[in-house]
Length: 81
Image 1: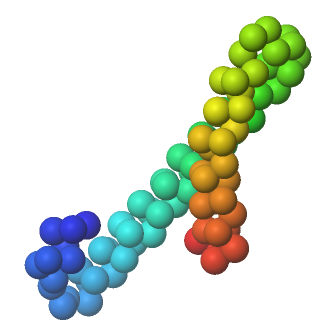
Image 2: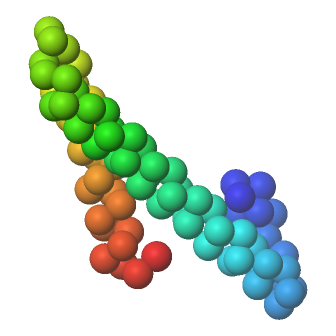
């Protein structure tokens, strides 16, 4: 999309297709963020089932790492994207 932003075309059909692509990219980013959150939560649940087993630092690190993705996903959902 950076090429499109640098070399704009004012044709109605072109602008419509560019907006559609931008919408699909935003949806894909939302899905990827939701997938990362789901994987992190699954890992945390698995760790809880088996006990800490010396891996509590790793579970804490994963929760912190993916908290940003949860917040991003919540912001995008609140905007209606």
